[in-house]
Image (cartoon, rainbow, N blue to C red; front, side, top):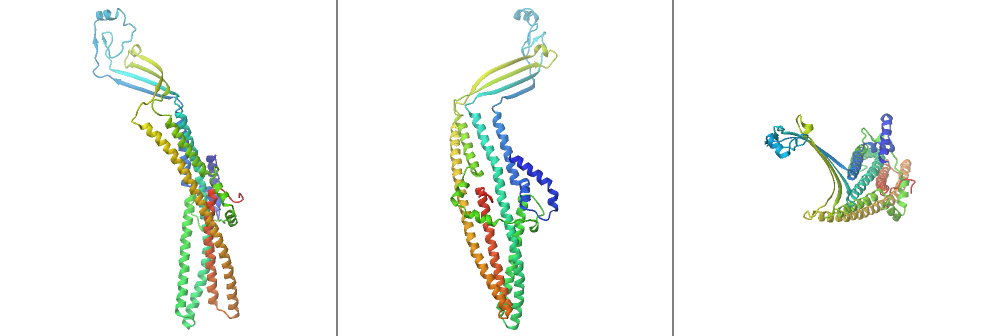
Length: 464
């Protein structure tokens, strides 16, 4: 199912490649589809699953007969022969006893048989397991559990990467808003420096006030450089995730669902924890299959102990003939059929060590599962706490921004009536812009934690 989904996505991306190249903006869906096809982590996870599927086939192959063959040509060095007269042959074997009979090499009876040093040998053997006390079945089951883990890991990797992609896109959206505010702040700061310098020259303000205005302008310039660097970094990370080149901030369109973030934060924390640690979650399923795989490994080790024999059917066929003109008369063949039992009596304690190691692997897998579940709960609790703090901070920042907007209106009114100054208006406007930037920074934190909760719980908008 996962392979079919990836193949369908690949065809979709290929079909829409030209429209994407010509489009002015690219949305989340297009970026996600490109990520599914191009991301190196996801591709590696797919290949790991393919390898695990081959391991299952290898384990199942032990049920089938193992057939081998050997074909060899041999040369006998220093061939020893017996020279017998015809009367001696008749006396030993009886008159005419050699006619049509096969005399095994290297016995040479001259002059009836010539000495031969070259032979061809062929052998075919078949071994079919009959009963192995469940070792093969346990090995197959263990391989299947590991293959299932790798299959789930493909989906889990995609979910992790999707959460990262959404977080980067949200950050890019907010960074563009901050950049726009900084542009306005820079214009106001330039005007404030201009006014401060002019006032300082006329003695209306002291020189330090003008210097402070210049420092504030340099701070805005520094903030703009930092935001530009962050935008470049986010774009680079999106390109790495999706495998797409030539992206820019203006070419990407994405709007975080802030209402969903607040809805997610308002959900019952206990219910969210149960959902994050339930057996329906991919991560938890992977942990359960890891414990099962270790258990099957222990089962195989327990059934491989000393004395307990494996039973198998063995069939072998042999053929030997000299390489000369008389090979038809002197060839030989045979077939052997046997039912054999094989087992170990003692190997220095290695099997005991394997059994203890398998028991330890089960305990270790269970401990890893318990630790992972604890980590999931901790990460979920941290993300939800950060979301609640961010939401409370946003409420405070909204109130502060509302106050600053009212104060700015007052300063603008005073300046229009001649009771205030442009300097006071600019100062208050810059203060308001800084408060708006602080709020956007909090929204970035809220979005990042919300996407973490989405990944841990599997919840999405309209699925609460």
